Image (cartoon, rainbow, N blue to C red; front, side):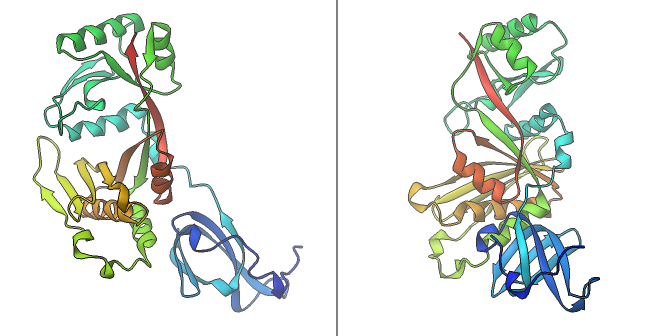
Length: 322
């Protein structure tokens, strides 16, 4: 029989405002009720911490938001994110949603692989749009698929390049055929449920006095009409380009990209505000799943998105010929 917590045990935990946006488990007293052993009744709540202020913590549980007085918390700690059902989708199927980003993309199948080529956007060629999506079965021996990729890209005046899941058999096979890691641009593909990520993003912003910010730093979202098969794009700009981001729909997925904050305006919550604006629009359009890419050499951005509820689905690398 577990011992009844003594009154002085209340408050002995590692929780606080720093866990807002994280998944936590909290054990708390239930005032006015008696437990099965005759002592105080206790209750456990598991979910994402939405806010921590004015002596109350709000947790988004499976039963909906639950308010717990901080003074009644007996114990608690952050816990790992729940495994996402979105991990049932293959890396290939997830990456195909990014094709909506490029209206002029030329894409040709090579078995389950996709040969891709697109013109420059914003003055530069995008690797994702100008690399072969080497995920799945190319439908022919790997050496033949490798040669086909090289020939296809060279015919279009592009450097042969493939995008492969890091640590996959395809990557290992291509490395064995003489391809090499480009050395930069590797990224984590992160996914999240739109509704929950939006709630978490808004909760993280709670407490920031946005009304007192200069008008030039407030968000001024713009809507761009649909392009090709994509349902549409939504661009958010804070101030005169202080922080920007873009959302592109593909079925019930939304791809977030081009999220950036001017160096002298970072760590002010602007990236979170951009994400919240993008997710709010995506939710209004019926999107259920959000995805974004975080380069592996940018751990700060990775921690930000994880705090907002995004989890890594897979990691990819670019390979080029020697």
